Length: 190
Image (cartoon, rainbow, N blue to C red; front, side, top):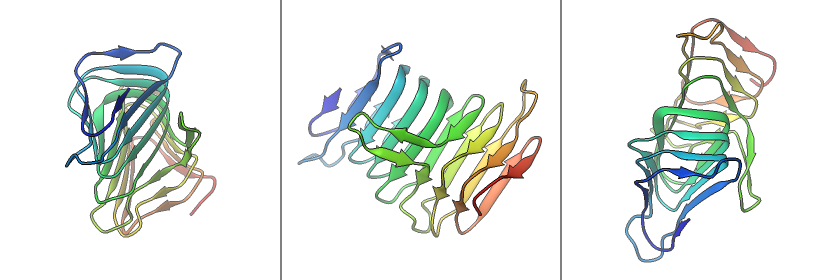
């Protein structure tokens, strides 16, 4: 689904089952070209590509893989159900991603064959990255880079047996805050 020049808003559920969901907002003359999620989006791959920001005011994103690319903030703070996530923003704005259980930060290939590795903000002060696994382990298999901004990784435990943070790649930021309910381990990166 594409908005050729402006904001793309999802007010009704999109369920592609085992197929992919691609949401694209382009900017030519429009002041903003956001993707606004207000209802559920389900697919094997959910590919969100916004010229400006990606926001979520309702619904849940359910996907084996999520790739989010934006020219501004990425705000996916509902109890999403994701397997592997990758995100990048090319302009000022924070990245906030919440998953309801175990989450992997890794490599995801978008529908247009672009591969996004890990999570990268605009690297300027204030362009912080927040990633939360609300009830399970948060695994960092690809780098998280906030440059001069902060990185906050949170792994909470409600029903899960373990709620670790497992670092297998670099996490870079002015401040790196790791908060795990059970353990923090590092097998790679710095």
